[in-house]
Image 1 (spheres, rainbow, N blue to C red):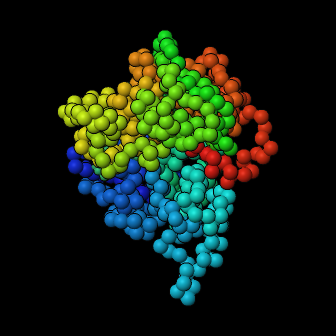
Image 2: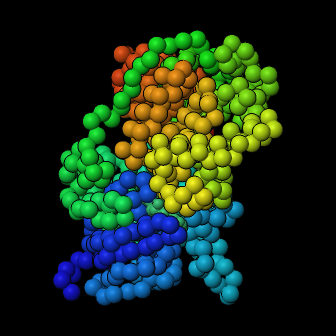
Image 3: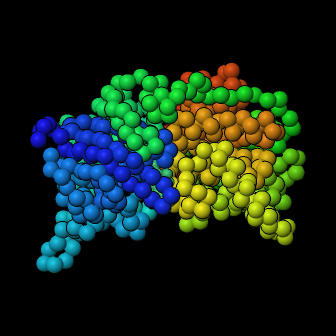
Length: 516
Ligand SMILES: Nc1ncnc2c1ncn2[C@@H]1O[C@H](COP(=O)(O)OP(=O)(O)OP(=O)(O)O)[C@@H](O)[C@H]1O
Ligand SMILES: [Mg+2]
């Protein structure tokens, strides 16, 4: 064996699904004590590759070597035996079990044949302490916010004493503070000699955390470079061209106020929220996690209740407070939780794209299926959805491509007021620019766009005006020219609250729109 530090080596791995070559000859290797980043566009094959290591899929061709010896990973047990622990893009926890039960699922400590809860909970507490998360081993997983789910997953991986830890976009749903915590844990594991495979679309994280980078394009490894490689070079390797302008906002003339929100209040959640968005405008909403941004836009869309206030579209108040009335008035919402709210996972791409339009067409009594299909094909092409065909189930699309379908659904429906909640989460750098271009086209055609984003450069780069929310209120409004990171943060932090949110993470978690 050549390198004693080599934990894993992958040679020429191929994997096809019906109609798709997901992996077409990938080479990769992992050493002790390194963070090896997998970088690639949405649908490039990153998640498929790591699933070969976790035993979820087996390769059609190619070899996997562990410690220099060829191995067969046919299932989760094989993977576990090799010391590989995987944290998937979609979590793998059982909501109704406790944290401790999830950590030790299938291998609970036993005494006299019974599950030894005391020992299990004590051991779980030690692991949770090690990852630095304050959560009770007895808490039900259902009650946890997404950041803590992630931490529980890591605790579970630690309990396996993994030599290899695979993390598929762990930071996509974390706030910057949580990202720092996660990085600290990863660095500690690296010092302990663990090899870490890390997938991310946030390029700045690569230099901050990584050692080496393997770039995957269209199912092939196209390069292996040090993590210190400049970002524009990484982008070029990844998308095959350079990206000139990351935030290509073009500002059209603005027209009438298409969305007007007046005095919107939901007791204990948000208070006296008023704003408008004009035709042609992009209004951004910035704020810290827990500021109430998601709750406000869900209320506007009729998905959540409010106690007082009005919502008007193009001058007329919504007739009822429900999603149907909002959609009839031309409001669309791309939710932050696409899996839970935005998609029907076991329906096809075409069916998902037609979810909104088909509803109204069916009601009007005319369903032009051919027209539907043509429109779906056009929008999928425009968005660059990577798929085998319009009939592919959305569940089997890559994460980023699922997000494109959620956005496409509203684009097809001639939405007048489009609300985007964290629209580019999990989206690769090239596809982000495509989504921004779509926002430009929408507003040029007279639509109004309201965009929540915790990605500050994105809000600043794409908004014509920025509203900053803090503790359920609009703390201020900044014109594009005044909106700097510092100005936004000053408003977002707002008046110092009596209890530091840090000292009470339970509270933050519950309120948290899972922002970043
Ligand atoms: N079970 C499956 N059936 C059919 N196609 C699949 C299946 N799993 C993955 N694919 C396809 O394989 C390709 C690679 O997907 P994969 O999830 O590995 O991409 P990714 O690089 O992780 O992308 P993202 O950054 O969006 O998460 C995609 O075209 C996807 O649609
Ligand atoms: Mg993926």
